[in-house]
Image (cartoon, rainbow, N blue to C red; front, side, top):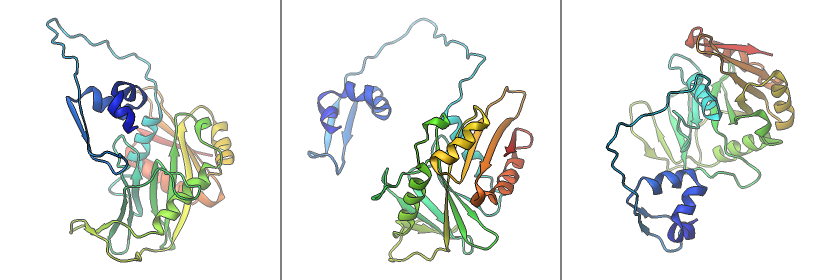
Length: 273
């Protein structure tokens, strides 16, 4: 990547969306990275600057909106961040709206939040970084970490992805966190080798756009998932419908998900199978 950055930045922009934004909207770029052999790197860019004199016109939006993985991410983020909901904490969330830069775990008893930052995309042994992690407090007082992979289509979920999601989270929380805070204190570095957190259970889920109930069943079996979400985006005069199917281990989450949906009134409804 750094070779392309130095020698063919426009090609790098065509291959990577993040670099496309950086290169096409900047006059200069300064890079300081541990993975670059000759860091720091610098690049002067010659952007085309055009001054339009006539009126700027934008085409009107089409009446039919194409929904995608980003819309599914938004639904999950809104669903799991209701401030009134007790015993639910969004540990990690893929944008838009969320924060994918680290994993946070809440000690519900004392209000401490532990955070792991600079997360790798994959873990050492067969793990896969989730798009979302939601922490639930069970009736027995221990925490359940639900790791979710979101895609546009159910068929895009990889085989056995559920096991890989759980492996990633389990291996991560077995290491010391980076920082810690309470509601009334700023973040501080965690200096200990162990973390005073409650017992965890790990579960996995998949989320995608609705195209039929068969997708829910197939994704649970193929992906070895505990729960599957399919979002049906209906016309604006109708509510969005969240289809949910859970395996035996995750059935206890269904009432909690139904209760969370009630905060949206009739704008979000749930259909459980």
